[in-house]
Amino acid sequence: MKEKITAAVLGPDGKPVAGIQGAIIRAIGVQRPLVVAYLRRLQRKHPRADGPEMARLLRRDYLVAVTGGGAAVGASAVVPGIGTAASLGLSAAATVGFLEASALYAQSLAELHGITTEDPEKARVMVMAILMGEEGSAMIAALTHQAAGRGVGPVKGWGSVFSNGKSSGAWGAIGAQVQKRFLRKILATQGASIIGRAIPFGLGAAVGGVGNRFLGRKVVESASLAFGPVPTTIPGELEPRKVISQVVEPSRVADGEDLEAARTAVERAIEQERLRRTSGTP
Image 1 (cartoon, rainbow, N blue to C red):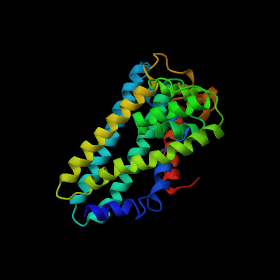
Image 2 (tube, rainbow, N blue to C red; image 1 turned 30 degrees about the vertical axis):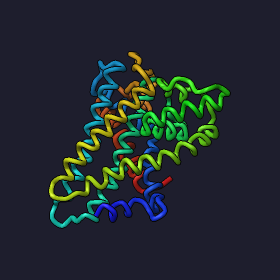
Image 3 (cartoon, rainbow, N blue to C red; image 1 turned 90 degrees about the horizontal axis):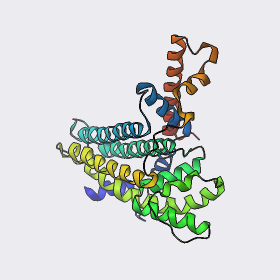
Image 4 (spheres, one colour; image 1 turned 180 degrees about the vertical axis):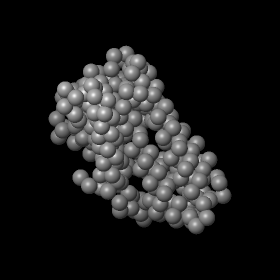
């Protein structure tokens, strides 16, 4: 059974089967408008939250999201009519969902530190490194300090390198090296979770939920190491009113109906972005 499940993710050569690698890379490619919209929505719900409180809310939402997804897919293994093969398909989807949630969390936390994620190459490198944990932080420190002609510096706070003005081409070159190691690591880690979630007779739900929560906490620890303490002040660009002024005319912002229309437009944009990445549309 285990060999059949592993073969569905990795081919005979040990490389990801067709489609898996592309799905993984798309999952970590969360675009900045989605990240900013999420942060602004949180601020509307918690208008008195400062930076550290926003970080706590991000962490809470993230762990709930990844734990719920793992448990839900694990439970599907015991639903009548869903066999192991079908459950594996759902588990692979849960892996993509885990990566997507992790990317949203990592980029949102970066924005709270004033590190913008407009450059998609830079954002992908950052997310991959965070998901790789200590190995990723050491790799980024080595690559960026080597490029600057210096020795490897301290790993703690390595996320600050993403606030500099490196060109997209520079991040692309660094990303090519990071991506190779990232794919090997994430498939080895999530491959075990996929197998766990596909175990029938109710065990899959426990493995899926607990496994994802463990991995989620590792991502939280890695992100904390990368960025350090969260500044108290939230960057002005993330203020909720700014998203409203982009959707409706400024002179009409005070109108309650327009406020609701603006929020609806943001939700629609978020859903469209999710659909775009799910379908693989560039």
